[in-house]
Structure formats: C-alpha cells, structure tokens
Image (cartoon, rainbow over all chains, first blue to last red; front, side):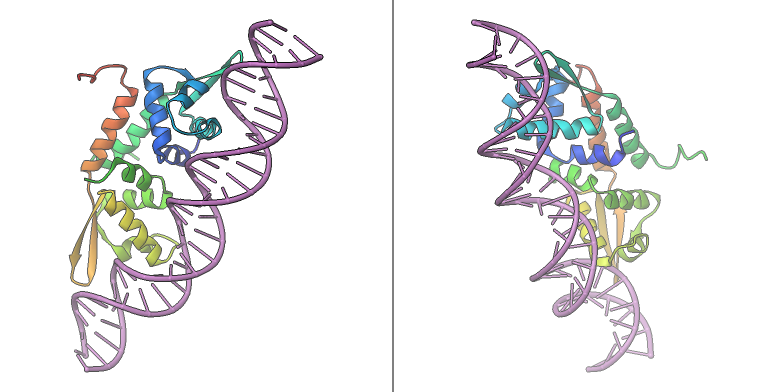
Length: 94
Length: 94
DNA sequence: ATAATATTTAGATATTTTTCTAAATATCTT
DNA sequence: AAGATATTTAGAAAAATATCTAAATATTAT
C-alpha cells in the first residue's frame, strides 16, 4: 500500500510529470524515456524508481529492456482526493 | 498566473495538505491554523505563504488577524490535469 | 567466453526545502 | 504612548532531493 504522501511527492517534480505524460501516450522502455530528456540515464532511472514506489507506473522486464507503463488506478484515487476538497459537504456519511 | 509547478510543490508537503483539509471545513486565522500543529507559527506562516503563492488560499486582513480561506478554483484545474491522464484519447482537439 | 547494449546501484555534490529562534511590523487596548 | 497580541520576515541549521560519474548487473550477439 503506497502511502498517499509518495504520490504527491512523486508529482512534485516536473521531470516526473513529463514522464507520466509520455507514458500516457504509450508504454516505453527506460532508454526511450531517457531519450526525451537532457539528463543522464541514472537520473531518469531514479525518477522512474520514485514513480514506481508511488505505484504510478508498472515495470516489466522484456529481455534486456525494461518496459514502463502507466498505472492509472492511482490517478483515480487522486481525483477523489481533489473532489473531496472542492465538494461542499456531501460524502460525509459517518 | 501561478505556475502549475507551484501547485504540485505546494501539495507535496503533508502539513500543507492538512492545512487545506482544515480550510475546507471553514476559514481560519493564521493563529487558529497554527494551533492545529506541533510546529512554530513562523513555520506555519511559511507554509501558508507557499499555498498562497500557489493560489490555493486567499488571505484577508481583519484587524490584527489574517483570515485564510480556500480558493477552490485551482483544485478544479488540478482535477482536469488528472482526468487528462486517465482519459484514453479524447480532449485532443488541436 | 567476450563484447556490446540496457539499465540500475552506489556514492558524491549541489540545491532546495523544512524548521527553528530572534527580530520586525501592525493592530488593539489601556 | 506603552503594553499585549497576531503575524510575518530574516537568517541559520538540518534534512531531503536532484543530479552527476563510475561501477555493477543482466541480457543478447558474436
């Protein structure tokens, strides 16, 4: 169970948000992802690791490659959080 | 126009998220907010400042007090961002 | 088995963030 | 005007984060 805090932390970095946007379009290998940034591969690998710990992406080894894909379920939970901020009352059934 | 980045940064801290939750219930003065935390007032003031820079709260001086209130419009924008992640295609009208 | 490719891990450094104490500013009360 | 209260600003210290280079691991191809 990934803490909510990890999710927000993961989203606080622009590079990680861009990675999410990229993976929204299609799944990619770590190398492909890294090619989109002016940053070393170890740095991207670190960001991928944080996203993974936040349960926002899923990795699958394919031979010597590692394919990354978005895990959209966490985003649904996020939307819930935001809705509860904006909704006046409601949803407060104890 | 507060950069999107500030909003995500603001949300990345648990204290600030709790402040948002508090203000969701009702507007409060800086001091009232601070009373909910085991943290000094200057620290809370700093968090309030970050939330304000992210345009997530509005402050209004009332005599010697400063009343803080939630600005929900930004949260609507956030929800949009998350919806665009989860929605498959759609909304891609150039 | 060696070499080449893909990716991560380890460790170091620089930057950013959080939090504190002390001081400053502003308002209200006497 | 002096004192009390509410809040912020300034500056410092500690902790967390982002990024790099170098090395390690794993897979594929020769």
